[in-house]
Amino acid sequence: MTTLSADKIITPAEIPLCEPQFAGNEWAYIKSCLDDNWVSSVGPFVNRFEAQCAQIAGTSYGVATVNGTAALHAALLVAGVQSGEEVITSSLTFIATANAIRYIGAAPVFIDAEPTYWQMNVQLLEDFLQEECVVTSQGCLNRKSGRLVRAIVPVHVHGHPVDMDRLMELAASYRLIVIEDATEALGSSYSDKPAGGIGHIGCFSFNGNKLITTGGGGMIVTNDPALAQAAKHLTTQAKCGNAEYIHDQLGYNYRMPNILAALGCAQLEQLDAFIRRKRSIAARYNEFFANHLGFTPQGTAPKAISNCWLYAVRVDRAKTGFSARELISRLAQKGIQSRPLWQPMHLSQVHKDYQFVGTGVASDLYENVVSLPCSTGLSNAQQDQVLSVIEAILEQ
Ligand SMILES: *Cc1c(COP(=O)(O)O)cnc(C)c1O
Image (cartoon, rainbow, N blue to C red; front, side):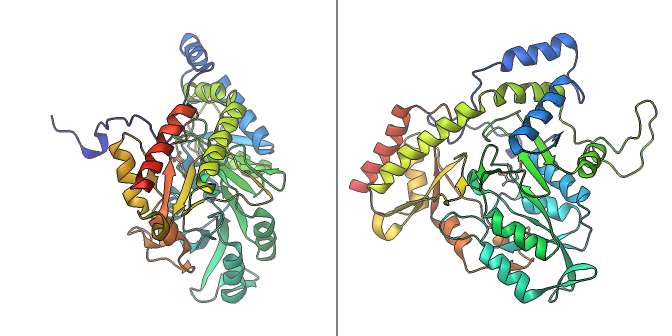
């Protein structure tokens, strides 16, 4: 039998980049699903997981989904974004954000990152809206493309929130809906407001490498009862009522199974401990890099509290003597997994034909940033091992 490349079994690194940890009630809750026969798309854990995620985001409603990409797709649909309209988002993001926009036939407009915190550059966003857009009776019009701009999807990269104070002001002036891609930012906040609950809709992901995992899963959160109801309906095949198979819309089977929500409930009980561990790992890396020339970690904005989901540092080759890519391969030789950032969306073969507003920060970060091991289960000894490899390369 030949194995397709997507199914290739990867030999795990001795020190992986970002692995999940199951140290709580995971087994017990999953067993109760099997014992009670509640394994599928409705069940007590789904309700509980939705309520708990909504509470963390400071919202009234949560709608669990099959993954974060589905959450983004459904959020854009219930927000009323139409095919042929435009949606502003970050160029520096995982491709799922841009894909979700494209699924509905909308056109992304990519905003560059700012160099300190690596988030959507809100000044560039303002420049774009001021110089290229005008508010009409139909909404915000991009004068160059002739298309209506309907929404902004800011991405909280690595769990560090975008400047949501300014972004929400701009959104209000230009009549734009805000859908937070908070997939990496569960437990983060900006100006004391929880990430995911600041915009009109927020989306989380519980993929295996995220802060908490359900194996695969996502969540839509909102304070708007109509949006929440629409999201639940759309992700449940737009089925009307319980008894009959009658549907009033083109719906999706995007629901999260109870068995996965059980995993999520158990993981949520450890959220505070996970965040504490992530912060302590970040603090130890920061201390090391503060004492070594040529490294600039992702910064933390004054009003931001990050869950420190993924640790990353920019390598200045002129000072260190090696590039980010060289560092990645040297670490790999020692069994240590590290990664570059995502290829910016405006450079992606899939999305390069869409408008980009920027100066080249995202591509600089793509070139020069390395993400380092930061699993919640990473021990101090393992982290020291990572740092001693970096130290040794520096000495050569
Ligand atoms: C993980 C992630 C997603 C998608 O979530 P999935 O659960 O993998 O579908 C979307 N956007 C960003 C920025 C992500 O990191």
